[in-house]
Image (tube, rainbow, N blue to C red; front, side, top):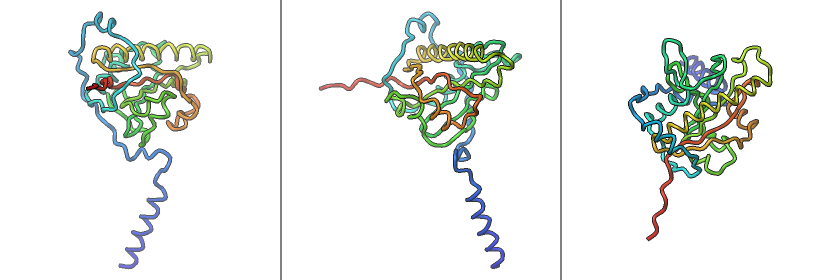
Length: 223
């Protein structure tokens, strides 16, 4: 019995020591998103009329269905036979990865599975930008260009197309938010080295932009 207890104790200690401490992504579970509601939304011309940037957000969490629709609109697969996306990319590189930072943790959108892959537990929203509102808004999207997917293209071309392709994704987010009555703003003011470290990115992964999404904050009624 003493031998068994000793073995269990050693195993518990080893398990504690071997548990990863930098990301704790094991605390997050993969999330299978519900199918996007393709029948939802306003007419395109109305959406274009309503598209705008907002910098005042409610801290209220977004429903999982809204997040599923948002991410699919951003760069989901809209042609299953070819795997092509709602946003174009040069040479169909599909090099733009969309990360989503919430109060619970950081996830990577998996367009093929239409799900969220856990990256790191913990709230890193404050690191996603230098604006005060980013730490309280429910969702901050981070657009990361995986330069390894861009083959032998020159560095200037990689930078150019990564920026261009991110713009397509960001505009899809803008249009979705206009359709759903959500507030959003795309942002370039980011401490990229600090955020990349928190996201555990490789050297050939480049943060391009971030975009905040949430419900509009209601004005306080004065009596």
